[in-house]
Length: 93
Ligand SMILES: NC(=O)c1ccc[n+]([C@@H]2O[C@H](COP(=O)([O-])OP(=O)(O)OC[C@H]3O[C@@H](n4cnc5c(N)ncnc54)[C@H](OP(=O)(O)O)[C@@H]3O)[C@@H](O)[C@H]2O)c1
Image 1 (cartoon, helix red, strand yellow):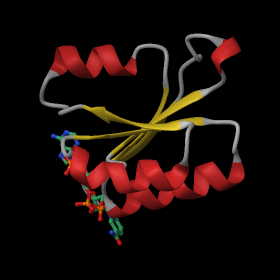
Image 2 (image 1 turned 60 degrees about the horizontal axis):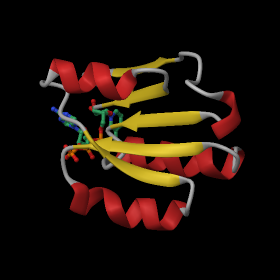
Image 3 (image 1 turned 135 degrees about the horizontal axis):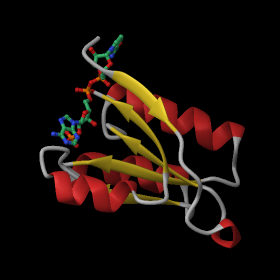
Image 4 (image 1 turned 30 degrees about the vertical axis):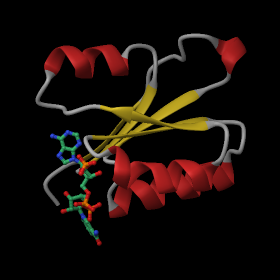
């Protein structure tokens, strides 16, 4: 396994509910994690992060209204910083 990390930060706004970004969520491990998280915690807003929207959208549809796709390539450090701001995040790839 090259890298599996889990980090947590305070949510940006408690009123909008906890937001969890699963980086690598379009992949096998990240996708399974996002699915399990949504079943354990239906109150979470689960953001599926990756470079490929076409890979991410079927999962986003399956997870429902609280889920969305976030385009992020971690080689773009400014974009990575932007999307991590205020989110809880898990990183799988
Ligand atoms: N699958 C297993 O059974 C298994 C078992 C043990 C350990 N692992 C380890 O777990 C990790 C993930 O495995 P996996 O099978 O889930 O891999 P995978 O299906 O190939 O998924 C890789 C994920 O990483 C994302 N990704 C790769 N480069 C990226 C970048 N530059 N910026 C943003 N996202 C990027 C991909 O998103 P996009 O393609 O959308 O960019 C995709 O969501 C690997 O380290 C693997 O060795 C896997």
